[in-house]
Image (cartoon, rainbow, N blue to C red; front, side, top):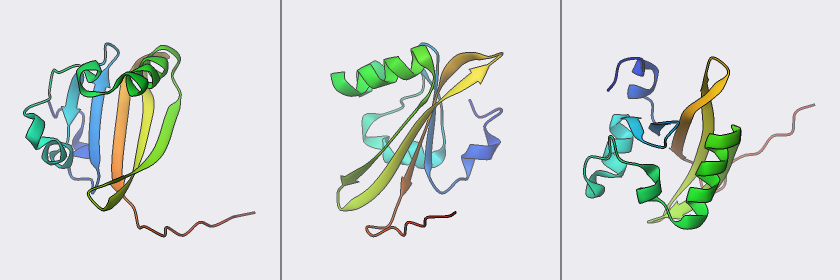
Length: 112
């Protein structure tokens, strides 16, 4: 399903979207490539793809909205993971996860 997700298809980061039941409803090409070794994940539930502690975070986001951000180092590549609820008519409708490669020493600016 790519309808409505044209904004994400050619981004230079992996974008995965799930519905309110945690079923994956969209993955851009970069996300599909990232998880290619796991097969086609469209329609799969996030619970089956995450350890218990991560699943609890996902459940909290789906219940209450909000966002979660962290960095990982995997196979020598540092990434920032940003998960945030998306809404329909004011109610949580699912989550969007954006995974982007970041420099090892990323600049940080304090703006006044």
